[in-house]
Length: 228
Figure (tube, rainbow, N blue to C red):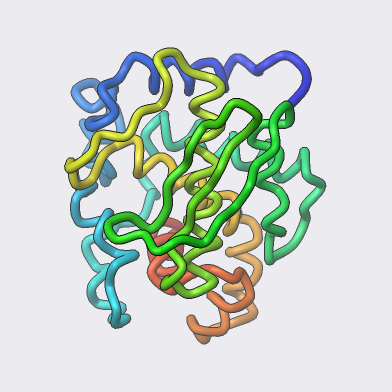
């Protein structure tokens, strides 16, 4: 994205580059957490499992609380980043076009491949002339779309941070992975759109269909916004 990076975005990348990728760099000093608000970092292992759930049960999401008491600063900044890219791509209604991921690195091409991944839902590879996003071919299209934007955040972070945004293999519930999930949620399900559509649509299956996202992602977003 051309132009000067806003101060708030530089703040986001500074948190990522200074952290260990596993725990929120503000965990010990987070005012939201200290005031009794719901801490994403304290629940990251449970959150990381939801895309792997084969059956939907709304009661499984009861542990996720509304962000009514606030949202920790890195997650606020990630949502601002998602809003910036929606504006840059001139997207104003769901579903968000997959082509928006091309803005993650406007200097290099981004290729998407469906492959038989065994462990992860997606992965990225940096090549000399661009990027390759691998998506698990066995996943349903809505899940692949969510993972596509998750991986787009990794590309953004690789381009903006030093050291590069790194995945910690074998660590369940990495904080950086949750940031990528949150980016995908915010860009595919902006809060204004979700509030508007939720007032019109009661059926959760239909709502997930409108936004073209997997049901677990839809439910997490609704719980965060206090809509279920």
